[in-house]
Amino acid sequence: MRELQIEGLHPSDLTRRQRLVLVYAVSIVSIVVLYAVLYNVGMRRLEGRPQSIFRSLQTVTETMTTTGFGAGAPWSTPAMNLLMITIQVTGILIGFVALRILVIPLFERTPLNLDDRLTVKDDHVVVAEYQRDTEVLLDELEELDAEYVLLESDEDEAKRLSDDGYQAIHGDPEDRSDLDRAMIDCASLLITDAGDSTASIVLTALEANEDLRTISFTESTRHDEAFDEIGVDRSVAPHALIGRRLAEKATTPVTVDDPAEGDEESIAVREVLVRRESALHGVRVGESSIATSPDLTLVGGWFDGTLRLSPPGDVRLTPNTVLVVAGPERAIDDVSSEVSGVRAPRTSVDDDIVVAGVGEGGATATETLSADASITTIDQSVAADPDVVGDVSEPGTLRESGIEDADALIVTVDDDATALLTVATARSLSDDVEILARVTDTEKATPAFKAGADYVLSIQRATARLVAAEVHGERVIDPTSQIRLVRTGSQPFADDSLIDVRRDTERGWTVVGIVREGAIVTDERAVIDADDEVIVAGSDETIREFEQTIAT
Image (cartoon, rainbow, N blue to C red):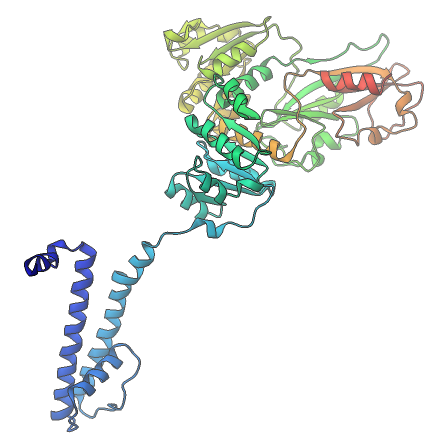
C-alpha cells in the first residue's frame, strides 16, 4: 500500500500546471526562509538587536507582502537597509509572478456565462443558428429596436458576438433547456438557419410555445411542403429568392396609358437608379429633388429588392435603390440633369434575357421569367443542361449567348469573384444590356456596381431585410406587380389639393396629376375640380382596389 501511495505522488503524475504551482510554492517558501535567516543574523550582528527567528520571519513576511515592517524599523546600518530594499523588490516581483501564474489563468479557465449579459425579454425574436453574416441580421433587428436572442452552437462565435454587444448565448438549439434559456416560451418569432437540424429545432420550439411564428432558411425549396407540415410559417431558400427577385426585376414592365386625344403632353414614368456617385446617395426621400419637385410624384421604389409604394420621407436613399418617378417628361428631364442613372421604363416582357449560372437561383430565375421572353442559359456544368456550356466570365461564352443583343443579363453564379468578373466582361461587350447580379457578401455589392451592374442583390442583406420586414410588420408589394397609370373621374377628390391626396402613403396608390382642358397639371398646389380627371399610379393590385372602392 505504501508503495502505491508513493507512486501516486510521483511528479510525473502531475499536470504541467500542478508542477508549476508546486515549484512556485517551494520557491516562495525557500526565499522567505532564506531572507528570515539573513535578517535574523543581520539584526544580531549588525544592528545589535538580537531576536527570535520567528520574529524575523514575521518581519520578512510583512515586508514582502507590503503590510508593514512591524517594530523592526528603522535600521542603522547600510547592509540592513539594502537587505530590506531587496526583500521589498522581491515581494513585488513575486506578486507579479503570482498574478500571471495563478490568478489570471484561474479567471481564464472560469466558464463565462453569457446568459448573465441578457436583458429580460418578452415578445422577442429567437434566432436559432444563422449560417450567413450574423452581424448583418442582428444589426437590422437592432435598427428596428427589436428584442432578440441569438442561440449559437459555436461557443467561440457566441462569445465573440456577445463581446461585441449582441444578445447572444451559446447552446444547442435542438435542446429544450437551451431554448428555455433563450426565453422561447415568451418569444413571438423563431428564425432558424440550421440545415438538416431545422425540423428538430422547430418542433422542439413549438412544444414550448405553440403560438410561435417561425421562419426557416433552407438551401433549396425541395422541403417546403415538409416544413409546412411541421408548422413552419414561412420557408425561404435565399438563392431561389434572389433568383426570383432578379427575374421579376428584369421583366417587370411599367405600363403607361396613352394620353387622350388633344392632350398637349403626357405623364411619363421613369426609373431612377441611385448609384454611389449619384447626388441622391445618402439623401432622405423627403428631401430629394424628386420629392421636393412640385411637378413630380414619387410612385414607389425598390429597396433591397422589395417594391414599396409611396415610401416614407425619412428613409435614406442608398446605392441600389431604384425609384419610380411619374410626371411630365420635361420635369423628369430637368431632374435627370441633376442626378445620374435615369432610364426609360421597360414596357414589354418580350425580351432577350441571358441567365448566367443555372444553380438553384438561376433555375428559379428561368422559371420566373415570362413565357414570352427569349431566354438563354449559361453554365459550366453539362449536367445543368444549359443552352451554352462554358465559363460565364469568358467573353467568348457571353458572345455565344448573344449578350451583345440581349436586353438583360441575370448573374446568379455562386462565387462572388466570378460574378464580378462576369459583370465586368458583359459590360465591356455591351453598354446597353441591363445587368442584374446576385452576390453573397453584402460588401461585394459596391464592387459589382463599379464593375458595371445596374442592379445588385446581396443574399446576406436580402435575407436580413426579409426578417426585418417580418418583425416590423411592413406592408410590402410583390415586385411582379406592374406599376400602372389610370385615368378616372375626380369626384372623390373634388376641392382637395394634390398635396392633400398624396399625403396618405399607406393605401398603396397615389394621385400623380390632373387632366384639365387637355393639359396635365402636376403642381402639388393645384386644387382638383369636379370636371377634372385624375391620373392615379399604383401596382396592378392596388389599382384594382382603387377602382373597386374609390373610383366606383
